[in-house]
Every structure is written in C-alpha cells, then in structure tokens.
Length: 178
Image 1 (cartoon, rainbow, N blue to C red):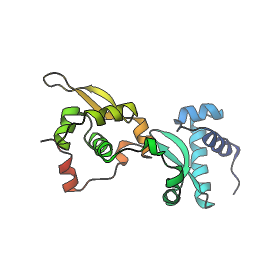
Image 2: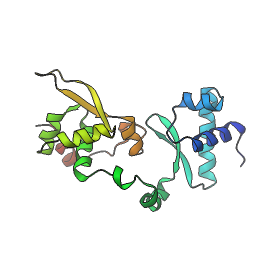
Image 3: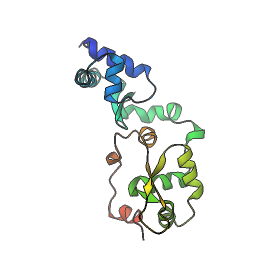
C-alpha cells in the first residue's frame, strides 16, 4: 500500500520533529488544512499497522509524534529511554503519582498523603517541568495548587491525564487526603 502525498508529508514532518506537534501546527508545517492533516494521520496510522512497521503515530499531550510500537518499546527502553540523569527516584515518582492522581493538590496535601516532607521532590518535579502551579486553594493562606504538565504527559507517553492507569479501591484510598 503506497501512501498519499499528504500522509507521506505528515510522516516526514513527524520524523524530523523531536517534540509532539498539535494538529494545527503539524498541518501548517506540512502546508495542509487541519482536516487534510487529520485524514493523513489516520491513513498513516492504518498503513503503519497493516504493514507491520516498528513505528506508530501516538498522541502525546495534545500533539502527535512518531514512536516505537508499545510491544517493541520494552526491548528498546534500556538504550533509548530517558537517560539516567533524567530518571526519577522512587520518592519523586511517588510524589509525581500523588500529584497526577489528586490534582489540583497543595504541597501540604502531598505531604499528608506521603507522610514525609515533599519540598525537595516538589522542587525537583517543578525543575523538570513535570508539574506546575495551577492556582491557589480557597483556604487560609491561599496555598499554591499543583498539577501536571505536557512534559509529564510526554515523558509518560500519555495523550491526556485520563489515560493514567485506573486505580482499584485500595490504591485510590492511598491518594485520598485525610
């Protein structure tokens, strides 16, 4: 199956770009209308799936990117995953999970759930742009509330926060504030 010119254009743009592109930006770069770009993405996805390619088109944080198929990623993760200096410690991952599942959430609420100070982990996640300030809580002192970012979605290969794995009852209780 041969790709149409539009699908080939979209494929080339996605391979040349390092970050996910929103549909309008992708269409603009390829010189297409958004509807044409969307149709080309669908064609490209179908082509890659039917031809058994090693890559697929994924939606990450509201944008599109080329990425290895999920069934191949485990074999490639060691070499091509995030570099060692970008890996998060267990404490940072735990803090990140609390923010992701409980957002918007304050630092004090994160600490209440974790049972230990989260100041260092929150600073680290802010520095890596995985979390950001999303507002102020309507409570005494107006504490800052935090939520996840597009960088978080990109790092964890999620299209939206709704794509986080669902929690069962026990896991959900762990993320509830006392």
